Amino acid sequence: MSMLFIHHVIGDLTVGKPDLMELYDSDTLEVAAHVIAASPEASTVVLRRSPESGVMARDDRFVGLINPLEILGFLARNCPDGDHLQRENLMKVATVKQVVVPDQGSLKEIDPGTRLIDALEMMKQGVKRLIVRKSGSWRGFSKRFSVIYNGKWLKNNATSSNATTPTSTSSTPRSLATTSEDKFCSLSREDIVRFLIGCLGALAPIPLTSISSLGAISTNFAFVEGSSPALEAVTKMPLDPCAVAVVEMAPDGTQKIIGDISAYKLWKCDYSSAAWALANLSAAQFVIGSDENGSGEITVPVPDITPSVDDGTPSVVPGVSPKKRFSSRSIGFFNNRVDGINIGAASLTRGRSMYRGRSAPLTCKHDSSLAAVMAQVLSHRATHVWVTDGDTLVGIVGYVEIIDAVTKRAAPSTS
Image (cartoon, rainbow, N blue to C red):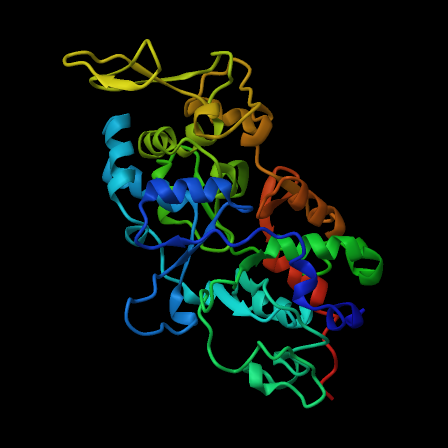
């Protein structure tokens, strides 16, 4: 099975990948929202512009990743009671640098000839995106020896004497824009798992083994109670995966999941509406939203704002305090129904049966096979699956857990 990872290079996974959409820390949040929506994943790479004089080292250009929840949290904290126009204006003046959490370790530029097994090890150790140069070509393996053997990363010039690399690849650090011809793409953990699911036969018998037997269930997850403010979830949000479970606490202390607040569900949301909801609603109200026909709709007083009759753009009307209608569609949840249930603290006792559509949490059982979980994550374009035992939340499976489970028996022996 280890041959699958040794005899594939990361360049095999870049075929057909679009060029990297560059977002700089000096860009506005409005630009960031457009780039995130157009990105293949629900987060995008943030770079630092090169100085006009001098050359910036390759790794110094990487700032980190930005996702929709970071932007929403910023808007909700800085404009909790403001109107739509105030939030829109804030997005036009605030920069990505004010929001993004610097994390250079989440990004790594690698050669297209890097072995797949080395790329997997990088991701297991915290790298979320691999930046791969698309220009040029490669032959054979660029890194015959790796962390699998000696426990540390080797530079490009630390390859073996019988490893063949292109002349354009050297030990000299390269920036993302060394030449105008250089083009890059990014590979995420989703891309890696999407490749692995096409190789289930070579991975046997691991794919048919339960996630509990493989130790792929992480019990280190964040959660908030449904009656807590939705904004509390942002303060507890882990970086990997970027998700917080919204739970109902049972008398015996167990947790029943009723939804989750995560970056991937808000991938292409209306930032203004979602930021208002995050600042003013409970966690349960935020994840439930309302059905699209009006039943169960949340109606909250909003001072001095009324929608324009012509184009629906909010406008200020002094002395008027109409009602703001918040629905699941307005923040990115679709095909959601609450079946006429009033959304409030009392309704939480009804459990998960009231949740439908994209607002429902993605769950699996502790005895689900790894292949089933991989298919579930990829088909929903999700970053994680919540694991339940009956109605009780017991853990979470993300891409790191999947990659670790697939590769734990694949590493070559060092003896």
